[in-house]
Length: 424
Image (cartoon, rainbow, N blue to C red; front, top):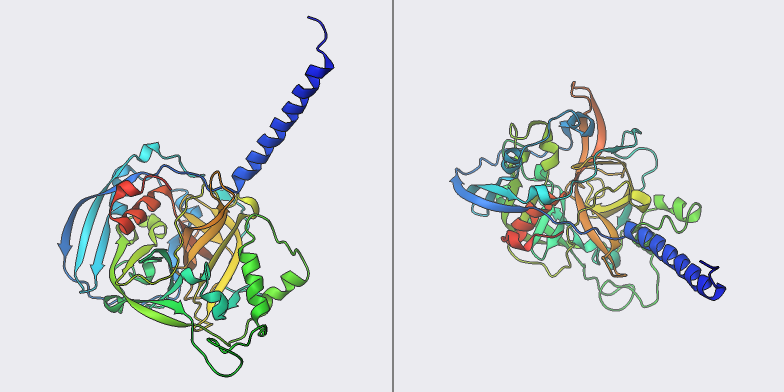
């Protein structure tokens, strides 16, 4: 065979380079794209009535004795029968009646498994130590706009997040202590942020703010939005002025108030109850509340991600109502230090009251350039974790991950039809 003419070789070489560059760009783009999951189906077997709860439990500022990531590594894998027991659930209605629903799980073997433990082996104690990196989003211009507006306050003292027009995802321990429902759950309410109308001083219309004027504290909140919308890209500002200003706090003026609505029913997985899932209790620290009336507020969808640490920047975000800043919405972001298929350890600064907040990230929709935020976990709170199973405890900030199975259950609670929950 003779030499290949240059006029033929050159276009082929160029095409090969273009294809290689495109393949590399697609690989990088995949890191920023929401993966598509086929999820199992959680179906109702039967429902039986239960006696009314005593509603005698009291909220706990911090949970203790939690079997954490290291402790759980030594536990045997759960069987299908175990999982069906853990995902069975109790429902409490607004009139105080209670039911138990057993479930079946179908298609579990068809679901790709989430990544196993990815440990950094680095540990810090964390609630708020050293410089407090939280942002107070006190101005109505920001706190009542998406994504901050999806955060809600639970009347038992926790936070939550809107995951449908009338459903709130929160932590199970905000409703139930593992033995009984909390005092106040029979009259449970959810607070939605609303703009507080202020007229007169300072300008025209609602909020009393003159056109073109910039109030003290706006800069911090704009900066928080910039940080919040900077997933996967690293810190645009890098070191220096942008990083230093994280410690500044916004002004109290224009602080939003709450519009409270009642809860129609509450659903908690049986895996959260004492003596059911043993060392896996922490994995089931989530609950869903159905509101009596849907607020006219945009909600945030659920998402499933195989590994947070492997994402560009490996960063999560959440907003809640920390006890030390009454009436204010507090936003934060941080990196994940350790993860298993069900739990996340992270070092976000937090205080009691933020438990139940929805943890989210922002990635691209498949085949589109649109970036979308989705809830990938529930902030369980600052906890004392049994690290080695010998009673020795360390304190970490713990979050419960949304797995394909949990997605299937929560989606079923929201829609009442598992056939609508086949893909995450």
